Image (cartoon, rainbow, N blue to C red; front, top):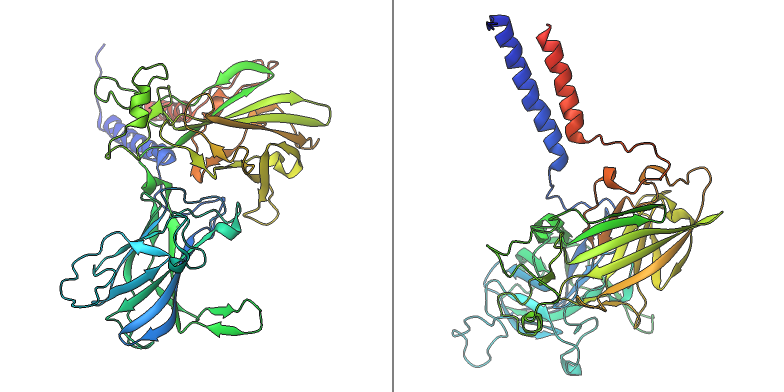
Length: 458
């Protein structure tokens, strides 16, 4: 049998090839990772840096710089934040209170009084708790820890005072710093330019007098998980009482175990070298995770177990496990999106707050530990987990165990989106006759086969 390729057949193949490329491009969009800092569950979340000039000096000004964390559930934990910028002219920092620069720079041109910092691009860090009172100001000296707004609004601000020299001495001669950078303590935040705003007003403690800053400018910084780390930091596993299947985190979610090319990528909990690796980290890997060897290789795993079914209620058990031998997570929090949170009846051993990023939609909850009880998620080991149970009231019009409805739509740990298992792997009800195996790839192949058939008989 001989096949001859006619011009019409050639044109059909060309059309088919173009369509296949277009189809593959379309489906590849589903795996595209955005660098945008927009967060659907916290659309207005940001860190705002307010720079208030409170007095003029012979060669510059004194300013109070305050960082406000307006993010609902993302906080900055130890070793804390660091804030940098570039001076517009040849400014220097004479003195500071509540903070310090990490490098003084070259101050050799000064004789007599030597400035605190002469660098063109200073970087400031917070002072540690226990700093002498004569070096403190309000909202300082917390080691750079900045709580989230929903979890602890009183601890969501951090301040320091700076005396700037070789700068302007009026609103018309002062030049705003440029190129602001915020690390927490690693990358992830992108800061916009400084913008002059209406001067801040201050109320005295007796609330009988109002004073005003001489000049104020703001800088807004937003967070992007894609910029913060190359791989995810947490994953989600699922189970239920009505199915023996335990859906583990997807394999290689946060990296793959490779003992040949990267023998230090993880550690076995029974290894005799574990104690040495944890207690004696090198300077290069001190802040890098040392995770337990697992199939997913994630520092954090969140397990959602549908535990019990009552006539009018149903119960869920949530367990957070720390697989990182180098990290104690302080002030941790968990954000869960599920449609039944509008009927949450009781929660055990966790704090709870409803998050309503959009009016009329109450499907997102923020959970965190009880102070002095389980607000510290210890490093990997027997004590490296916290757990709680949630009791939901059933809404007859919407409640079902079918098609994975009982499992969360998304979960965040410390503000980072955790990787969920694929929906077709969820535990299904035992009375289901079969489980749908359709996926994006199979759908694409079906559509492609249909067009092959059409072109073949065109």
